[in-house]
Length: 127
Image (cartoon, rainbow, N blue to C red; front, side, top):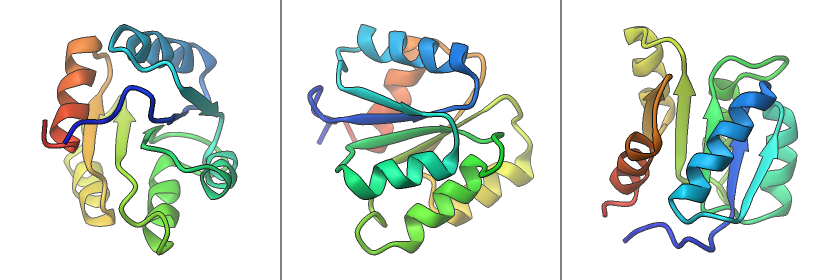
């Protein structure tokens, strides 16, 4: 099963340049339906209002981190299965382990390109 290109994707990052980069990469891969949030709490509010096919979130954000967002998403029955990819500049083993324990579906270390992103999305959806 792959992610339908019409499925809404939520990009969460407090750095507008990264949001733009992710939007462009997703567009290259055929995903046009992309929303964005600048932090975890804004993303959480959006997730409660709309059915997303995938969340791609940065780890390091204030006031709510991507890790905290992931834990909140996994704590709710209606979003417990929402596919979630974490993006980070740091590949610290303890972060990867913490994210896996919290239920992240995949993990991308910056910098990355469209092929890497596609590979991670395909891996999440078992394509």
